[in-house]
Length: 251
Image (cartoon, rainbow, N blue to C red; front, side):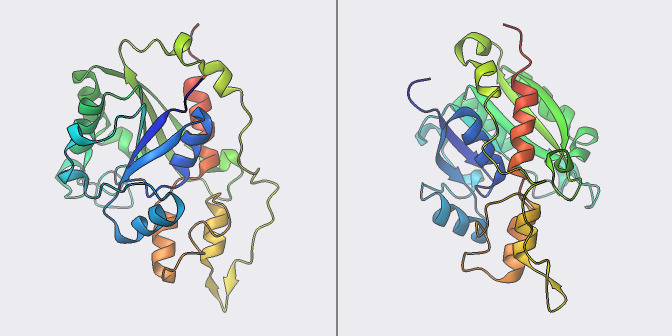
């Protein structure tokens, strides 16, 4: 593959989705955009690359070019656990992600959201992608399929320009056949779940398939650790989704 592909990450907190994309493509994240104060601490400590801050304020023509864009736009507007306000929710940032894709023209866009997005707002996302010259394929994956002790159904989307000859230029079959670099969750020894009757952040971190201490070793409060961990993606789940989406192309 030569030089490693470059990833830009939007609103993912540099977590499991980015880990999976880095591993699958043998790529490196060169910048992120996240305005959440505590997610920014994870980015600073675990990535040490530029955090561009609020996505609504970025001038995309001044940003380092990338090959892959990852985005985990907030799920609350689409989640059945929320009010499902969709585009009327102030946390709805898809228009800004669309702008980033349109300006940066990455070869691949990797999106993640809740399953409920399929029935609320996803048609708009697909229409927008088409309007800027991108095709897409998507898949629902349960974290339990990769050994996590919970279902956590998530929608994963891979978008790419209409003229992207990925089968010949990007060696997808070879990439997809690499074994997952992440530990088999069926074989992992879980840490203690409770401390004086309260759930430990370390156990939540284990449930999400993250390396021990990825979040819990940082100088954050218990509530902040739970928020960051809960907003993330199981890397084993995301890697499996990429295998399903990117290894079935016709040569």
